[in-house]
Every structure is written in structure tokens, then in C-alpha cells.
Length: 145
Image (cartoon, rainbow, N blue to C red; front, side, top):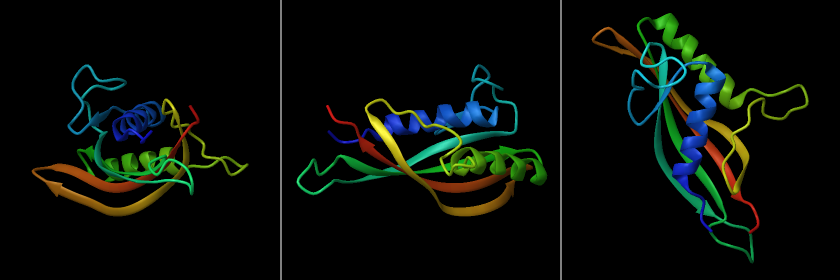
């Protein structure tokens, strides 16, 4: 069964909001009722950018997937937006002393087997709103049925 990009995105969004302790929107800015901080800056926004599937030999050709997404941190100052981007990077890539990822990304029916930073575009400002763009890849495999 193919990996659901939507389920991976929702799991990453949830993990980011919990781990950074700041709201994370899905394709748009968080709203006032978003947890944990509503639409108060700083916050992040997750944008799904597509899924590439593959699979093990002699198995389901769509059992593994590379899920690409962008996380845009938004704030009112350059220092604040860089702080938020650091929190996002730590949430996604931080490791324990044993080498495991420090935060879990829990996707129903799947196991996250890798994470990597694809690209950082850094800080930009428009109309007094600062943003910091990062792209990540999460590699996922399906669990046996």
C-alpha cells in the first residue's frame, strides 16, 4: 500500500507544534484557535511538496516514500525568525546521545526511517514580516499488513 503524504504531513505538523511549543499551520498561517499559541508570532507553516515512492525488491513498489515538505518560520524580527527556524531544525534533526532522533514522528501504518535537510533559503522580509524557509525530506516505509 502506498504511503499517504497527507498522513506524514499531519504527523510532522503535530510533532513541530508539540516540540517547538509554537503553532504550525498546514499550508496556511495558524488560526487563533490553533494549539499551542494560536496565530501569535513566531509560528511555522508546513507546505507539502510531494511524495516519491519506491520499494524493496520483490515487494510492493510503493512501500517506501520520500516525502518533501517546506517549513516556513514567520516572525516580526530577524532574530526571532532565526530562533524559530533553529527550533524547527532541532525538532526535525535533533539526536539523542545514542544517535536516535530526539523526537518521534508517528504515522499510522508507517515507520519513519530517515530525515534530512534538503535546503535552507534563510531569512527574507516583506512588509515587516520576516520568514525563514527550510525544506526537509522524511523517508517512510509501510509496516506489514
